[in-house]
Structures are given as C-alpha cells and as structure tokens.
Image (cartoon, rainbow, N blue to C red; front, side, top):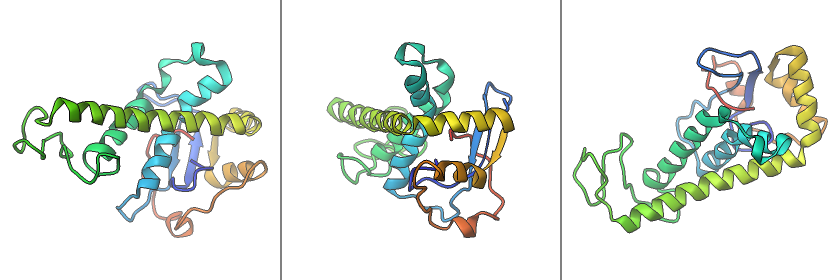
Length: 199
C-alpha cells in the first residue's frame, strides 16, 4: 500500500488479531471521489497479493498457508469486474455481466447464468487469471527487492502491535522512495472507514 503510487495511503496497521480469523489488518484512508482508475485497480491487485507474496518470499512456495484466502478472493472478484463490468481488459469496453452477476451482452437482464459463448468465457477466465498472476508476481518482486525493509517493519510491528500510517511511512522512507499520493492531506482527517487490507 505504501510503495505503490496508485493505492490509497495507509492510515493504520496492526498485527492484533481480530474476530473471524483475521490475523491483523491495514486500514487505508479511502478515496472519497468515488471513481477509481485502472491504475488504482492494478496497484490494488498487487497490494492484496502482498500477504501471499510475503509467505513465498520469506518461507518458500511449499510453506504458503490458507491465510491469504480472503485476499485471493478479493483479487479474483476485482479482476473479474475489471474484465466483465468495467471494460478494463483486452476484451474491450463491453459489460458482459452486471454488478450483481446479471448478464447484459447476448442475454436477458437478471439471467441466472451467463449467456455469452464458451469462447468468451475462456477469454474472461484467462484475463482474470492474468490480472491475478500479474499482481502476485509484482508483489513478490517488490517484497523481494525490499526484503530488509520488510524485516525492519516486522520488528517494529512486533514491538508496537499498532502503527500509524505516518510512522510506517517514515520507516519505509529510510529504505526507498515513498510515492506521493493524490489528496493525502485533504483526506487524512476525513473519518476513514476500516477496510481489511494487507500492508
């Protein structure tokens, strides 16, 4: 969230477990403008893959756990909407499904199953998988490149358990350039809503 230019800025991060099996979470300062760019979606795919990527980078592929299942589902849902609803893929600016799963192209509204061709379904699956894998590989590359920083942040969080976004960014800035986020100053005091996200 902190090293990616197009994600919302970090508000707070904690390793204190929450109910529902959440082993901690990061809370962004949300963008109140309502509209999100393709760049925002692509960076968020990377961000959500951070937990799984961290397991691979630190422990190796054989030691990954089911802990990232919520993030993987979020990535899959986001990538599918980019492809089938927002027109943000190689399939072009077409809405193949509605936000509730209803079909628009080639089918009736509120149809219970997609009415596009099997070929289109295969293309959708390929695009969704490509987005997810692209996010995963980029997350692994970023964490691999900043392995020393990751260890420093782990030590800080184990000691403090909760860290404010500004303190987190100060540590990150000791190791790499922290990109400026649009509207951070204006949004920091605007009652952020908690969103479970990886840091």
